[in-house]
Picture 1 (cartoon, one colour):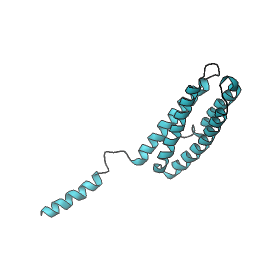
Picture 2 (cartoon, one colour):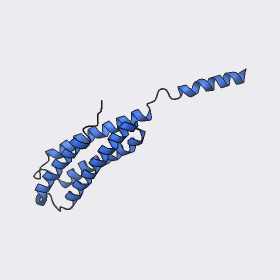
Picture 3 (cartoon, helix red, strand yellow):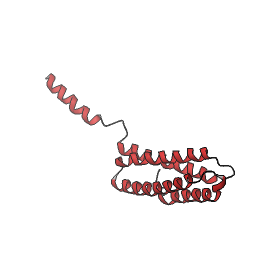
Picture 4 (cartoon, helix red, strand yellow):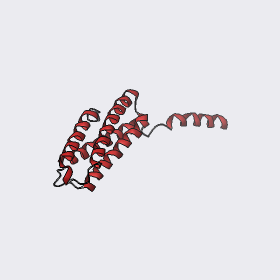
Length: 140
């Protein structure tokens, strides 16, 4: 009788063990949407900068945070539903290439004062890249 009760309790506990927590897919969705939102904010901040007010450390901080957000999105992709994973993977790959290009172009300049046109172009391009690649990812 005791063995029967033990088996019954074990059988009941297994289905209940998955309750109460978020699914990996739901957590991945939240990670993607949170990182996407942060990228949007940081791109908007960068777009407001002009060579006369921008500082190299400020730009590096914002770009580094964007790179970290892209990594968070990439880390969450494996837990997304297949169609969503494809959409997010394509968007982050495209955006990552653009970020790398912008960073590379900015890194080739020794000072902001000598690179004002380059900075303005790079930040506009980053905003455009966000709009095309990551903005279409729907988040509720």
